Length: 115
Image (cartoon, rainbow, N blue to C red):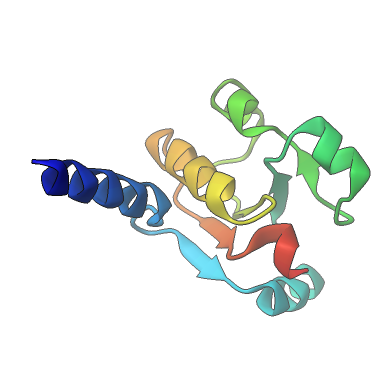
C-alpha cells in the first residue's frame, strides 16, 4: 500500500514540473540571445523581495500569486517570456497563462539559478 502512495506522490511532482503543452522552453544562454532580438513581454514571477535583491534588466515583476489577476494587463498577441528562480514557478505561471488564452509563452529553464 505504501508503494502506491509513494508512486502517486512521485507522479504528482513529475506532473507539476512538466511544461504546459505549447510552451516553449529555452536555456539561459538562449534567453540572452532572445533578449537582443525579440520584442516580447518579460515577466519575472518571483516574489518582490527576490526580484529586488537580484533581477534581469527588462523584466517586469508579477509574482506568481498575483499573475491570475494581473494577466489581463498583458498583451495576448505578444510573446510572454517567463522567469523565476529555478524554473518551477515559471512553469506554473505558463500553465496559468495558457488557461487564460495566451498562446506564445516561453519559459526559461533553470531560471535565475542558471544566469
